[in-house]
Image (cartoon, rainbow, N blue to C red):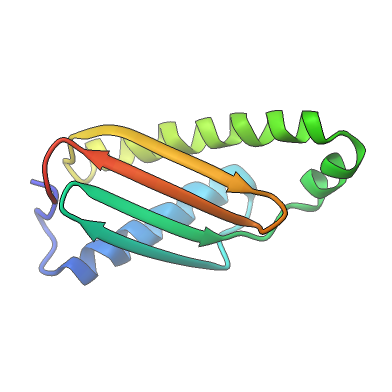
Length: 118
């Protein structure tokens, strides 16, 4: 059911890009610099270049541990909202979403594992 309403994988990826940016903007008040999405059978991988928020950059310099905790909870919020969109708007059966962020490289990687192929 995941491709329902989409005429091509490209259209599906464009919609995912819009939703990724919308969710990212709602949490961080900015979109991503670049986003590459790959869809392979039962997995969707997203690699994004982010622009680190000045407040989080300052927090990283002042207290790296607290900045890591902030990143962790922001990632949790992103994953929760992304899963809701993927299930409710795309009809995908999401098994799990894995996400990590490297503040120094300003890169995030998101892997969505699905019950069955897109």
